[in-house]
Image 1 (cartoon, rainbow, N blue to C red):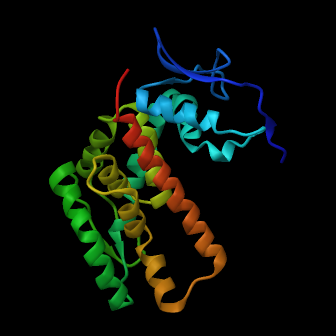
Image 2: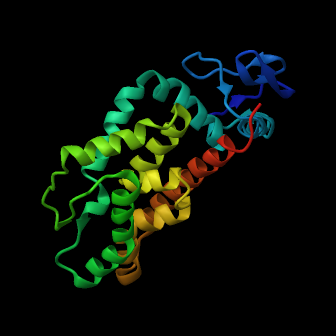
Length: 237
């Protein structure tokens, strides 16, 4: 697909009545749905502006991950906040960490070492006592635990919620997503925990290029979400 031709020369960040906006030759940047891209921190606005300014003769959307995350929040998270929270709680009800291998003792031990501390963290920090299953049979979490997860998710604003959604859907674990959101782990640690099984299997039996490329892509997306969080918290107007 041919990149869209660059149509602007100057990129500026303006502190306006509605918040911080990026302008291209004076024209405000909007999301695909038409919302003005009002950004919540100067650090994030400067970084998004930097992505626009770094474009060459053509605009490559794939080279603007921060802008992509920002417009996802504006166009998808804010208009559907309740549905996003419900979906995240559903992930928590079927969290990756709650399914540990019963057939391979070596893998089971590795999972227990890597995941049990986060199951404990969910109990002590989130108030969610999660049941853990040995094997693949579904395990039901209590209504109290699901309610605790819902409260933990709902306390975050739309911007943080968007990054939580990205981390959770990429890694398959709401608990790990919340741990990253609350600075208990970084994106690298989340990736290692979420893909513990795959990485263990790859280390033992080897891995093909397609699987490695897929994991590398996911790792990069997690890194972008973690960077977004840092910029979000890195400075106001």
